[in-house]
Amino acid sequence: MILPNILTVLLRIPGLLFAISVHEAAHGYVAYLQGDDLPKRQGRITLNPLPHIDIFGIIALMLFGFGWAKPVVTDPRNYKNPKVGMGLTALAGPVANILSAIVFAIVLKYIDKYNLVSNRYVLIMLQQTYLINVYLAIFNLLPIPPLDGSKILFIFAPAKYIEFYYRFELIGQIILIACIFFAPYLLSFVLQPIAYFVFTFIDFILKLFP
Image 1 (cartoon, one colour):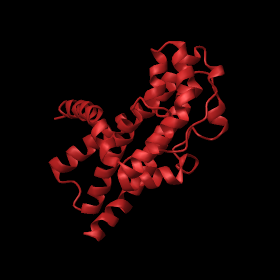
Image 2 (cartoon, rainbow, N blue to C red):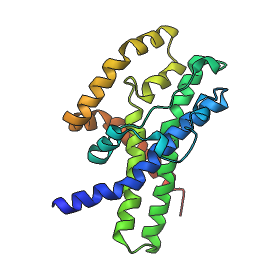
Image 3 (cartoon, helix red, strand yellow):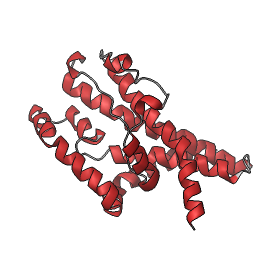
Image 4 (cartoon, rainbow, N blue to C red):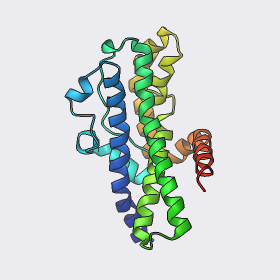
């Protein structure tokens, strides 16, 4: 029982590196499109995973399916509309992961349909890459500081929400880390409604492909 679990963890690594790179590069690129070149100067608009890796976040992703990368630093003062700009920049990461998951879901569908891959380890790696992209998007859509979901609310929330956000960002971070390492099942329960919506959406897209 131990060996397959270890093997699965190892086969997750390529998917993890891809998912966090897409996620963080999307944050940086959308910030850059809105006039903030700080992510570009820091080398964060890249699919090279090395600038994006947070070692504890990667370990959490590998073991529990929930985790984080090194956050992209932006300067909202460069945005035409800082409140909306911060929300759009935050939204970019989960959207990039969901789009990536759709691509891998389509690939897996045709692999299964036409029996294109016989190596089970390659299949596991592709399946894990699909799932990791979905889970990374779902986790980041939680409206708890400092996750992307809380910043997406900037688009719609009143200005005083931003003050609330920064006041409770550290507390939210502590709660999330505690849940990931000590209560992952509780976190899974909270994420179920978001997961249902995302998986339903991906299934709908898959049905468009014969």
